[in-house]
Image (cartoon, rainbow, N blue to C red; front, side, top):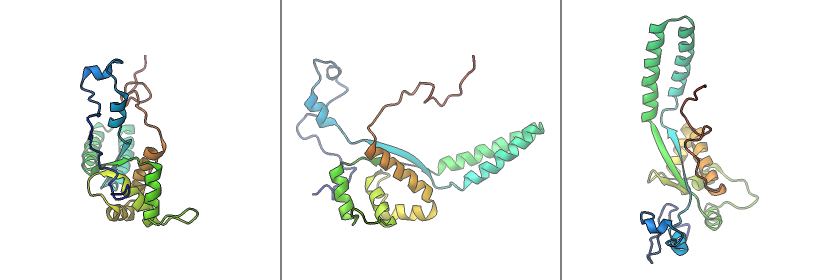
Length: 194
């Protein structure tokens, strides 16, 4: 099986017992650390993005947000409360249409073979079909999301395919980093003033 025939999401089985068991406390000590096991347990970077089946609902939210601004300016608390309730309902519909798409990085060698299999050559213009094939080859979840499905999505909402493409690009071109979830810059909690 060549690299191109193997799905980017296929896992390589640990065949020699070198996979690192991070649940073993000894593996986390300098004395217990096994570099061979760590390397054998290494996996390609994955990134995820959320796309929506109903991005049309964003227009409804825009309209309601405008009306809410007017209702609050007029001190219409009952009207504002109804608008907020409507907005929550629409946001729930939007959330229910969410789909998390996970992509996996590939080596330069694998990407070169993939480009060749798609007929992408240096200096030639890349077609939309080739681009979609390249993107789809990196998708590992949801299972079964192939180039035909990505092409159908691109017909309806190309911006969301662009989000998936950005995740592929980030995955293949950026070194992995772990954000500090509680730092002020990455926190989604409202900031309090002193």
